[in-house]
Image (tube, rainbow, N blue to C red; front, side, top):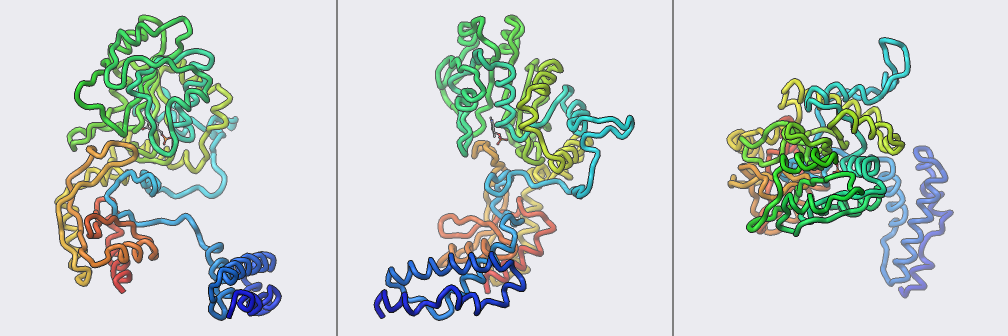
Length: 442
Ligand SMILES: *Cc1c(COP(=O)(O)O)cnc(C)c1O
């Protein structure tokens, strides 16, 4: 058959529609018709390109497309990568909570029967946790924007050249600052900035001294940046607020576990006037940006019209409140990301051994490795772990089978082996993972 004959051999839209009449009992007729037209277009293009389509291809394609439309695109996955705050897998997994589906006292004071404010639900807990008032917005990028827009629009922000960072997915500090209406006053060099550099840059237009935690890279060797307390002293002396973007909202000291992340409370105690950080990094909550600090500054941010545009939804308030309450109560293990970080290599090894026992045909072995904290932190921020390593001719095939399974299992491939780290698998998912492995092995 040549291309013309192939085109002529294709059924008409009406024929296909009649063939698929039964689908209109399940899906809206217009939707079925649209999918038929789209599938026909693909079929024609392929026929013109000289491809031979098997009998019934169009019908099958329409059913496949409709099935895809009818099932959730956003789904839960089993994260066997060992990256705790995996940006592509939604960063921090959420603490358990029962979503309020109906109405809620989001902006309603049950005591007085008057209109209330949505930020009270997290405000009290932030005050407890950080010792300062705080508010929440959509994410930390929004927090940086709001802070600079309110405090520095039309003026200058002094920042070290070593802190002009890009986090990933296009978050660049200099661009956010430009959008906020503030002008950047860069000081020092990439590797060295001294307190005198900040001092020399201050003019009557200076509105904020900004410090940014360079989460995802380290300047090693001949490097220097001023102590936070020196920056705070300079700000006080000149009456200019010091604002620190901490990136990851680490509220507990994780240094005993070998993770060197700045602790939010320490910055505030050092006298920083305003801090901001993400809700879904080391805080272990939902996507959010927290701003906390001097009452007068936080009140100004709260009044800025952009706060209204960047505010959180009730669902997010509910999860954020749950997370903050666990932190206040020091119930670390109720927060999945913190529990995963605190899990010992020994416990991970025991679970991995049990899993290997359950799925002998996997023929996996245990090897030492590192779990990565992720969420924009450096690769050095890692924890000792035990990995399940599976040697295969084509590990890509097993990886694909797992990824396309239900539930999807995300593993990684390294040096011809499929690697799985149970640190990021919830212990209650171990059974499900064993079953998913059985299925993927066929
Ligand atoms: C991650 C990060 C951000 C962006 O936070 P989002 O919550 O992802 O918007 C900003 N600044 C620093 C230093 C970060 O590490």
